[in-house]
Amino acid sequence: MREDPPNPFFVVAVDGPAASGKGTIAQDLGGWLKLPVLDTGLLYRAVGVLVEKSGQSLDNPEAAAAAAETLTADQLEDAALRTRAAGEAASRVAVHQRVRDALLDFQRTFANQEGGAILDGRDIGTVIAPLAPAKLYVTAKPAIRADRRWKQLKAQGERVTKADILADIRRRDRRDGGRDTAPMKRAQDAVLLDTSEMTIEQAADAARRIVEAARARWLTPS
Ligand code: CDP
Image (cartoon, rainbow, N blue to C red; front, side, top):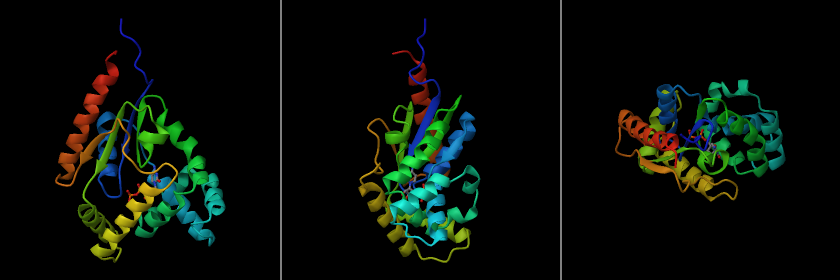
């Protein structure tokens, strides 16, 4: 007789630095597995944008926590969250423990929904869903990530140089990886996927294969 799998539902954690391809991969996996996807970066972006609108400092933990505590799901739809400035603001509010605590329940509830879920971010495999049966850590060389992000922002109408974006990416990597609370890092059991030399299709295909193998293990009694 087959034993129950260790997790009731299939959760996929997709972590990694800015513009590594994790968002595209998460969306592809969601369509393929027919599972809902949460871009957790939007939560931090929304908090950053709210703090800026209130005229307070992004480095003020109380102001940032207050914004995080009042955040509602409909505020995640705003196109303003996709800008370069919102990414920088997100990374600054994301260092505050109280902000992360305020956003924890929403993410855990999403992860634990019936049927399973896919979440992409920085700490999904380490903090939000440490028991997720499938974990990926998606990365790419900084110059390649900068090129991708530059094209994205240009298509959105932002005027910015590639050198500025590369500097943003390096600064954000340092801040996200160096913070005390839930730093960006590969979970021990996450599979590393370097998309530097891959097209979107190749990266999505590689991710599907990793997740397929994880799903087979998850369904197999130990
Ligand atoms: O799209 P991109 O990878 O540039 O950024 P994002 O995923 O939207 O995240 C924006 C910022 O939010 C990151 O630089 C992190 O500082 C923070 N973040 C986080 O701390 N934890 C997460 N789970 C997701 C994002």
